[in-house]
Image (tube, rainbow, N blue to C red; front, side, top):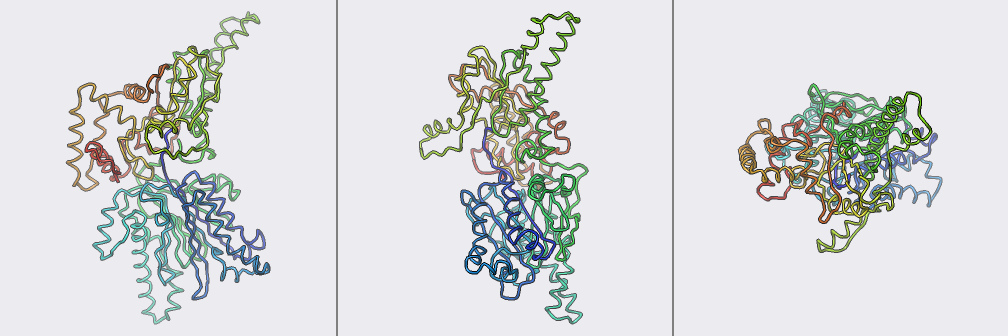
Length: 633
């Protein structure tokens, strides 16, 4: 998209199912670490604020380290992590190359040579970018069964409620981030499970060592996780490791955040995106499974794998459609086809916007994520041109001359690479006006392809959030090419509401569709709707979240989508722009037809899948009205 927004994190987890000697003989000692590097790198799009990596070793002797963690907020965090991960191995090889083939020596003396691994890629929507904010989070305990690591892709809307519940139970959390609260929640119920098993076996007069072994065999992670997530409100995929060798991945009941897994006789792997697993492990698409919403994938210490329900799901899931439009990599087969379909479906609106003038129109896209939607749009244009050709040829009843056929086939759609995004630019200028001038040069254009004063220029973007990049950069430089009209097409519908499940879109005042609607209300003397909406939102502040209603919908009711789009076009048109600017958006109906299995559309429709979403959107409106620029969750 032209506007830069941060979004979901990425997770990666790998459990080896064979003894380490097996992988040493078949692949080499560093095979598992290399796979984890690829699995994380193939999801680099999901987090560039930082990354974390952890491993657990099985059967270590007392006194030996069995959990290793490294985090990095370096400019290239994944590379920095694995440079550190391989340091011990390289040092051992340098000192005595024979020892790099001694598995026991490596486990005792090299970090990260274990049996289970977990990686995390962070895009921060809460907290800073310090190492302390990076996952995995570690809840240390001398009992391996209580030692817990958690990493996840989530945002929870009811952190304050859960914090109060922990305090009421006698706990004293020192961190109020959702990750820390989640860690404490799971840790509390893990402690309870271990204590219950300990008491049970103690009655049988077993030794403490024997009890510990039995606990590792009998731990019920399904019960632990079901108790932990009972009051979670939000979207999440959480991965976790215990010191005694259990691993899990848990997904929210609406399926808001994505999660995939794959198992063969050698490994079990979990990731946020399907293509990452397919590429890293050469896995067939039909064998890479989606984790069922409301369920947990649990890998026990003995290597057995089960998918078990931890929370009841609604009749229809609400998977995030923004994943399909923009956030996930377009290399997934289904996502690629869905994005193409979105491009095809917006074609009729674009055709109307250019007044059906194919001959004098150039189509292009705003790099880089809109390229697939552009393929669908181009196909729709080609199909339309072909239909016109067929009609003209048939009308000639087999008596077409060479000149007539040449004229018929001369009508074609012109596809050009017009907008060029340069490498990420940095500016050290502090004055706002000068910084804006520098930012305007992030994009460049291809000259000589537009006939000045004659051609329409259509550029498709996958979504428009703020519109600031269009106004400050893209439209200004496109206008210099001299088009008669510029049509900006969004393959997504209008973004009207904040997200609270992992995407960094929490402030209504940053959304151009919201600002356009407010301007329309003011222009038409309907400020009373703004006042009434504020009062309704304020009246719900002290209500339980299950009773809160999304009253922000009221501000959009007086206007059609086309009216709001026209006002958006006014807001994003640069000063002194010569070309006429029109903005068209896909409809919600088109979105659902293109992405039938991912119906989560709350940022477009305001229909939040959890109660906490309604509270967040009302809070966002209150914050905007009161001039408070803080986050709404």
